[in-house]
Length: 554
Image (cartoon, rainbow, N blue to C red):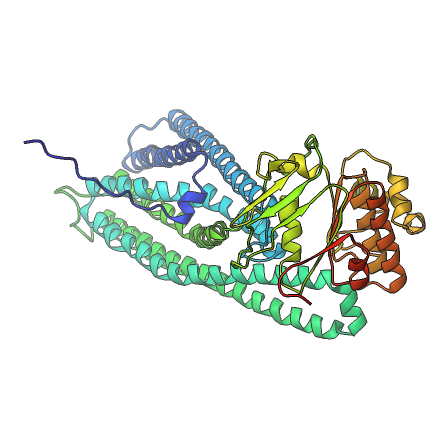
């Protein structure tokens, strides 16, 4: 009879274990070196106890041999501790590097906003919060390894010399982890609340900075400052709550450690004075054994003290790992292609959308756009005009249907080559933290002067403090809305792209500026470019070759 092997489901790993998984060999090596270094102290304690006990009993003690042995062991212990720290530091660096790379890569390829939060929350997670994983790797993990070995070894040595001392250690030692666990629940909850508040405050700061001009125009400075003061006060209170828990755990630990060491000292002292005659294995406690036990007692509690000191590090790391898991669980569409430079697609610009739909299930109209056409996408807000542009640009993949460009299906294999033929003009002007020249060219070849002239923005650039070398900031500080919109037009038409996609190019502009932007777009159509605009502007739509209605007709 053949028995089938029982299938066992592997135990799911905790979030913290998953995010600190890189460099397992370095971490194990660091813990092992830390344990070996800590085990050297009992040898040093034995040397000191033998020397002092010999002096008390009149035995011949070689000071030179004792000192040399103690110093040699101390140097070895210091070397092993240094190697352990180097290994743990390298492991922590690898953990942070891999986690940060995962965040940056995922956000760079994310086609829509993350459900985890805004840019403030994600940047805080990838920077200051992520750094809290390092103390867990460098402090908590080695301390945990020492706790699992050193107290057992010292307890066995104490039991060999005195069962009474062993009982003291056995009673006081386990109480420390029990109280640490009780305090740990409060520490974990407080740390999670603090992590969440940091992300919320960062999101609020990013939002307010992006709306700084509007805040000034509306005279809402005092209101905004009051809101920030309230949120900062809440964060300060949560931080103090975490610190209170940390101090509480340390106080409890020090109390029990001090009581345990004091009880051992009292027993050893009275035993050596002859007052107590019990607690050993049939013979009186010798001075050497008494001194040895006194030197071992503090080291019995030291790993527990180290673990308690790093307990807050674990609580913070747990909170960060939970947020990292929540961030990773936020599934959003992925940007097609690698998102980098590519050789442009060849062939006529023919765009076709067939059977495509939005994420909410609403169907988009089938459309075929040939090279050189000018198309206006119109419809109510939220109908899917911007989404249609993103589908054409390969920034999104439709839940259903197919997008065909230049005779090939738009996919991850063709998206980069297709986007090399596109000029993109977003609805909200946005700039990189670089010079204006870099923002306009984006590393591409083309005639920048012509692009600035066609966008009627040459004089605006000339009036900037450093011209094309001016850094505007991400929101285009120092520019009006119309000027920023014209600069995005110059960026879109730079390099003479075959297709120009413009999202609400004339929104919120005065009539004169809207006319300039419209003329600049139509100038591209005259040279043969395919122009597709999503707009509510009836005058702009009327100047296009065709109008395609998205959603219900206006």
